[in-house]
Length: 276
Image (cartoon, rainbow, N blue to C red; front, side, top):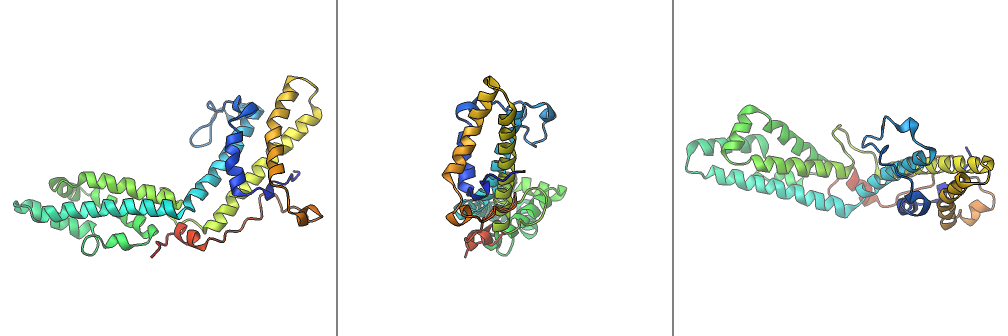
């Protein structure tokens, strides 16, 4: 497949292209029928070519957007603060129950603290992001035990479990961790992979449009492809190759753009390290 220069488009260039996909000729291309949440729509093979182009472009950019969101230290700090707050609120409820006038409530609170809290009650809030996700999920597993569920209900802590679940999964998603266990790779690697997917997708779409324009006769269909092609050409104009590349250097292999990540702090956070 021909390489058209998309390896010189930065992450922000691909991300901003989402706006182009909702303007002009692209705005008229509806993907609602085919845009399945799991990206495996049963009708995908029947989709018109422009629909497939739009889906492929959007899906590759969505993957990039997910990595960029993970890279934000501010987002991770906010998610961590919400997780810590949920843990403190849970600890306060357990502490209050430990002072209850009824002995069965006090006993239930003691069992809950022993099984579900760390240290004096909030030591888990000093863990790394990844360890907090693991700890939160261990709490949720413990809460499924019939005896523990009864104890949580007795001390009025069940709403806190729901809050912890929401905060834990939000933090996991922010780190790039889903339901499947495992830490994400270094942010710089995932960013290169996501940009590479965009380069591959855009090269493929561009190549198909060029081929069609070489064979379509004059008429509405050709005019439509020309209109859809135009934003791609404008994207390449916005990010031309460096002078050294333009003077004879070969373009990197498709799907391997020149993208390096210098922000080691973000990479550290994305892999699970909480800033001091």
